[in-house]
Structure formats: structure tokens, C-alpha cells
Image 1 (tube, rainbow, N blue to C red):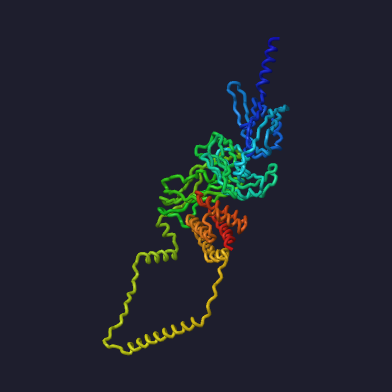
Image 2: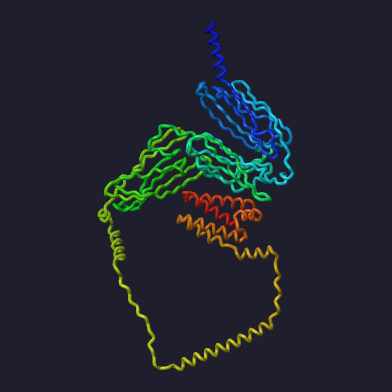
Amino acid sequence: MQSRLTYILFLLISVISYGQVNLSATPDKTTYSSKEVINITIVLEIEGNDYNNQQTKLRLPDFSKFNLIGTGSVTSGFIDPTTNTVISQSVTRLALEPKQKGKVKIGSFLITIDNKIYKTEPFDILVKDVDKKTAVAANSSKDVYLNMEIEDREVYQDEPTIAVLKVYSKNMDNLRRVKNIRLPQNNNLDVYPVSFAKSEIDPSDYGNMSSQVVAIFLIFPNEAGYVEVPGVSASVSSYTGKNKIVSNKVKINVKKLPEGSPEHFKNAVGDFKVSIANVSKEKAEVKKPINVLVKVSGEGNLKSLELPKIAESPDYDVFAPKITSKVTTATTGMKGEILANYLVIPKKAGEVSIKTEDFAFFDPLKKEYVDLGQETLNVNAFSHEQILESRTAVEKVNEYTNTFLETVNTPVLKTTSFKVKEKNRFHWNILFINIAILIGLFIAYLLFKNWQKKSKSNKEPETTKPIGSVAETEKEIRERLKTDVNDYFTYLENLKDKENYQTFFQTYEELDSEVRNQYFKSSAEDFADFLENHKGSVIAEEYRSLTQRIQIEKYAPVKSPEALDVLLTFIVNLYSKISK
């Protein structure tokens, strides 16, 4: 009998400790003004393994008296060492905007776990009216909200995740006033823009609030652990000025890369291929440089990965490479190739093996490391004598001719200066001819002055030219100051082909400055507003987008010729429309 009681007691204790669920909801405060945002924190804590038996998602109460601005959640878990129990915790944050004043009740949050419904206690909040002075000072930025959404919040280190920035407002007209989007900056992550093109407006995304996607960007976290993505900022234009708005912050769980990585693994995460090739057109010769190209292509953290270098060897000398990239960012990730162009000088004749360092990467889809090892390029280097023997008769004649012209001084024809011989005889005829010419010129001058006086007396008095309006005068001045943008387009094309990127962006700034001065606008923001009023909102948005893309490409560590081609086409099309 005593053994049965002991068994029943241990069974009850295990059942109680196995499935304990706590659900609570608390606001950040109980009293708000009608313009304040209400933040509610819902905490779901489960002791035991019942989290796997969760049958429904968290169900919200009736929010008809509120506007739901944004949501966010974080899930974590740990093991209690004292009881050896798994504790799972999920924290959800809601941002609400009250629609009415006074005492408002917020109902219960519900969740079903293991066929049992758990709910929170309802609570009341008080929404007060704002002062009249505060209401007068309110501006349109209070009616516009930014929300950053990150769908995949659990990624590996250096694995990309896509972020979407949306703007919400009750008034659709406020959506087009959101400008100057600044992406988040943090030492723990790298951010690369995908698109700043605005999507179509969704008139009923959240209740009576319209929404629009204004930016899409990739986030590469470079440290493991919980990383907080800072909010994205933007400016909202209104009649009283510009106001800054900031989106919500989002925490992502960055998983540490698995153990057992190869010794030569560095930070490549994705799916890559490595190749090495000799791109020199001439035969390899001892003590003369050749161009060796190492290419890493694929999908992953291309812009931040450490490239495999050419391994050192006593058979050749290698110098620091020139790095170029052809990378594109999309909603599927970062794709393209990174090129490292090395100068290699063979030291001996015969076959020379040029090898890269070992390269390995982590594939997050397969969740395993891939070791590509070394890539080898075999080059047959010739001595100078062998190069001379292999040349044809025509090549030898050309070399001898070039050597002769470079080393032998060719004779220069001596020219003599012609001098007029002095003559002792004086020519009276020349003197009389010169005097006659002077007299003729003087008579012609007198006749011209006489004709000028007669024409002035016979000329009718001129009518005063009417003074035009301010707009006509401004248009006339603008026509005189009109910039010939075609010359700039040709020059930018030449700079792009020569890969002179610094002068390319300086020339674009000169073009932009001259076009703005043509319309008497000193800043880019004023010019964008001018285009919106006179050329249409489409051209104005294209101009703002071009300004942002110029800044991104100008300060990019690696310039892509394809990206510059697209950028130049955009510049030509836009400024051709503006100059019409």
C-alpha cells in the first residue's frame, strides 16, 4: 500500500512539472494620450514539452477600437539545471493606435495547447484627449508609420535574410511624401539594397490604413547570437517642413556555424565555385609577367567573403591582385562573381604549376561544409632564347625594324632660313604707292561717316520693346542657360568605358549642378520638388531614386561595369526627359 501511494505521488509531481503553461499580457502603461502608441507585451512561457503540442496560434481579442500598427515576436528556450526541465518562452509585442478616447477595455488573448485553452485576464486603459496647443502642432508625420518585416528571423552567420520596409497611413496622399530612406547601420551586420521602387498601394492592408512597400534590402549578420536590426529612418514632407520617422527594430536569431569546419574555412557561406585561368594572349616567358585570373562565382556573401589567394611558390613571384566584381542583389539573395587579376612572374623555364589556396564554404541549405581544395593552373614558361627561335620570319623582321627605329638615330634634314638681300637702291615707286593707299583709306573713312549720319537722320524712332512678364523673362533666361546634356552623355560614356569611375561621378555632379542652376535650384531636394510640380511625380521619383543609386554606387567598395551601364542608361533617359 505504501509503495502505491509513493508511485501516485511521484506521478502527480511529474504531471504538474511537465506541462505548466503561463500566459500574460501587460501594457507599458495604463494612461495614454490620443496620439500615443499603445505597446502591449504578451509572454507565453511553457515548462516541459507541451510547446510541441500547441494547436493554435496566439489569438487576438477584438481590436475594432484600435488601429494595429505593427507586430513582432521573439522565441527562446533553455533548460532549468535544478529541475532538468525545458522552458520555452515566446514574447510578442503589439503596437496599437486608439480610435476613441476614454476608458477602453482590451479583451483576453487565447491559445490552445494540448486540447486546453489558456487566456489572459482583460484589462482597461485610459485614453486622454491632447491639449489644443499640442493638436495644432501635430503634423502629417504622426499619421505615417514605417514597419520593417523580416520573414526569416533565424539564419546562420553570414547567411542573408530579406527585409521589407512598408509605410502605413490612413491618408494615401501621405505615402508619396515619404523620402530619403536610410537603411540601418550596425557593426554586427551588412546591409545591401535590393530595390527602392515603390509598389502599388494596398488600400486595405490593416483595417482602414493603406500601405505601400518602399524598400527591399538584404541583411547579412556577421556575428552569432541575438542581433538587433536598427530601425530604418525616412523623412516625411509637409507644409510645415520635414519630419523624421523611424521604423521598428527587429531581433533575429543568428545561429553559429556548426563545428567540424575545415582548417582553411574562413567566412564563405552559400554555394560557390572557384576557377583559375591564364588570360595573357602571349606565350609565358621567364622573368616576364603574365595575367592570372582567379574567379569565385555563385550565390552567398560574395561582397564580404575572403577570396582564395594564389599560394606562394619558389617557381614564381606573385603580386597583389586587382579585385573587380559583377554582383547583383535580388529577393533570392546575392549572385554573381568576384574576379581577382594577379600578376605572376615565372622564375624558371618549363612547366610551372600555379595553385590557389584551399577554399571551403558552408552550404546553409544542405547544412554542411564543402571543401573545394586547391585549383591548379599549369603554365609552360619559355626562356628568351626559346621565344626567339619560335618566332616566324615576319615576326623577326618586325622586331628588327622596331629595334632599329628605337636605338638608331636617324639623320635630320637641315633647313636653311631664307634672307632678303639688302639693296642699296631706294625704290620711289613703292613710296608713292603706299602714300596713295593711305589717301584712299582716308577718303573712304570720310564717305562712311557721311553715310552714317544720313542713315541716322532718316531712321524712324524705335518703339520701346514691351517688357514681358516675370514668367516669360525667366523662361527666356532659362533658354539662354540651357545645358547641352548630350555632350555630358558622350563624356560619361567614355569615362565608363575607360573605368575612370572617380571622374565619372564628378562629371555627373557637374551635369546635375548645371541642370539645377538652369532652373534656379541650388539643392537636389528643392529640384526634386520643382520636378514634381512641373514635370510630374514620376520624373521626380526617378530623380530621387537616381540620387540614392548614385550615392550607393559612388561609395561601393567594388564597382561593377554592368551596374554602371544600367546607371548611365538611367541618367541619359532621365535628363533627356528633364531637358525637353
